[in-house]
Amino acid sequence: MVDKVLLRSKFRGTLLGSLIGDCCGAPFEGQLMDSGSKLVLKKNLDTLEGPFFKAPYKKFTDDTAMTRCVANTLLDPNGFSQKLLAKNFVKEYYKDPKRGYGAAVVDVFAKLRMSKLSDPLGPAQAQFGGTGSYGNGAAMRVAPMALFCVKHEKNQLVELVQQSSSVTHTHILGINGAILQALAIKQCLLLDPRENLNKKVFLSSLKKDIKELEQVNDPDLDDNCNAYEKQLNAIEQLLDGKIDPSDENVLNMLGHNVQALYSVPTAVFCFLKCTAETLEDTDQNSFRNTLEYAISLGGDTDTIASMACAISGAYFGSTVISENLIRHCEDSEGIIKLADQLLEL
Ligand code: F2R
Ligand code: MG
Ligand code: MG
Image 1 (cartoon, rainbow, N blue to C red):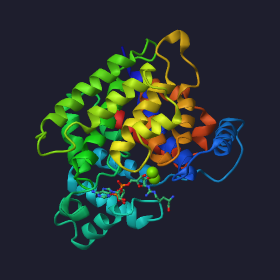
Image 2: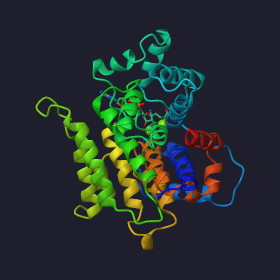
Image 3: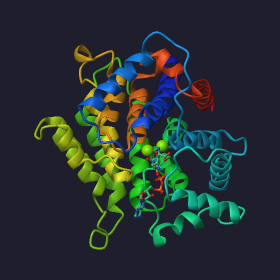
């Protein structure tokens, strides 16, 4: 049973997880992590969690910039609309373009601005010769949607995520990746961390939902008809120990790049691998372990860590996160305020 106090902590944990993963993962984005880099990472995180010291903020990137836009659009007194979301993205990007945005998504912002938002979905539909983007940009910013829909039917969350994704990402893999991330967060928000976590049940539920989503495609015409289901099966094999969950196997099977298909399932795996199933085995540091492990896989570190820690934060709540680590991240106070406002909605 999740009461209001725990839910508040979970809302904060979700958005703080997303912020911390982004801020701590960003310096390693695009790297292949050897044992030396992993040691540097561990020392960095130990320092940030240790006694507080004054230092420049660890800056957030596009992941958090866009997450804040999604949250603010949901909180708008006139309610969520795709046009308002597009407007908020454009305003945010031109205010602060140097946040490491995806190479192609900036064309969407330019076209939206030039056309004065006359067709909020047109520019995204035209991306990549009309196929749309399958990058993880829609998934990386989806956390506020899961918070907003915590008490809603699953289908309402799915619809809202489809709508918010299509402002920049219209490829089915970009959209379904965002839905998978949102469903993982929603499931965690409803689980009590004082009870055992049944990973099999958690994964089966995600698999059932994803299967339904992917079934709408025609298998003869669509190569992507069960792409996410396959990734979830791979997670199961890696967790079962049927396949050795070495970094090499994880990267070969799940991936770690900017494509949603090769990063969202990886984030789900990071959370499940670093979280114990029974209370007896539960490690106080599961959140920190998720953060460190997600970054240690290299590649799209800010985004994978952001998504993995959003899931972990949604499960455990903010109380397990080091206060000093939170204070080192840019705009953590603003992020907490957004989480509280979304709860009040
Ligand atoms: N952009 C980055 N990181 C690189 C630079 C960061 C560096 N630290 C710096 O500041 O210089 N990270 C951010 O981008 C990812 C999210 O991207 P998003 O929003 O999905 O953008 P986009 O451009 O739509 O897609 C990303 C790339 O994926 C490939 N791609 C997507 N769809 C494709 C398609 N249909 N066909 C072919 N390729 C496709 C393209 O290469 C896109 O540029 C996050 O990691 C965020 O942190
Ligand atoms: Mg980024
Ligand atoms: Mg990234």
